[in-house]
Image (cartoon, rainbow, N blue to C red; front, top):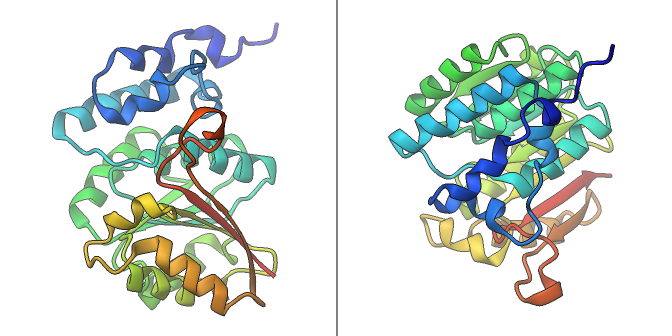
Length: 258
């Protein structure tokens, strides 16, 4: 007898988030969102229990700022739809996307599959505890350090045992640092390799603590100067009526190495 899909085993799951107050749950309060998004529906019962407990603890210690449903559903399609088994993530924070990526990669039978880099030792200790609780030690390794430093690249080479197929940039949000990350990591990608950048929209430019234009400016200038090396699709938030197609106001850019 076939096992029921996880979404049928636990019908509430993220639907209960409509009752929570924090802005991190805004996606779940949008018109038409009365379903369980695939990033949660594909989890088994134990995996969902980990995510639910992660939400509870991050509420308690006020670790807010994860990428969210819209961004992670896009990532899930890239990773699972294309069977990508070598991923580098720049920016771990409290581990939301790290856990979800780990669950995807484990379901695909991948190991040594995700290197996640963050400059904060404190949040990496927090995330490591959750990686261990989720049983993702075979899939995930955390590296503490500057994501634009050559040491991070060395760690990725050693752990992934091959070039990254997908690079996810969601780290400092600073203009110059984002340029440094692109210059450092693009040579590591194979032909056809993908880069996904969160916070590429003009709304998110304010996240740059140096007030230099953030990811939005860095992406615009870098893709202009490297047009012969990469192709770029920049998804923007366009609020208002039917124009609200891409729902994350922070924006997303997809680059492919030619």
